[in-house]
Image 1 (cartoon, rainbow, N blue to C red):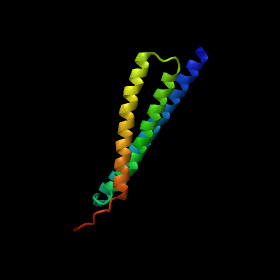
Image 2: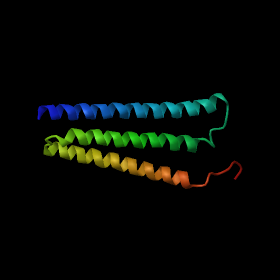
Image 3: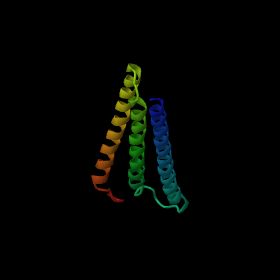
Image 4: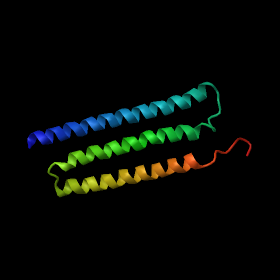
Length: 117
């Protein structure tokens, strides 16, 4: 079963690499959006919500992938310490993703305040 451990580790590392790429892409897109408004001297007030919603989606996806990688690492002959660590990490990441997804839904459904109101 050593080969199964190696495959699981390789798969988990690959998922973490994808997670890093997703977080990097999301961050670069958010920074580019903000910088574009600053360079064009446009007001950010109306676009902050849109930029944040887009960026939050990338972060939620990254958190889900991180949890998947942790699950794969723990599934092969886990010890009680491994299970405890996974439970703590999973609870934290799941809570973060849930609250972030809730914020995204609230922001998406809330009416946008117009300038001068």
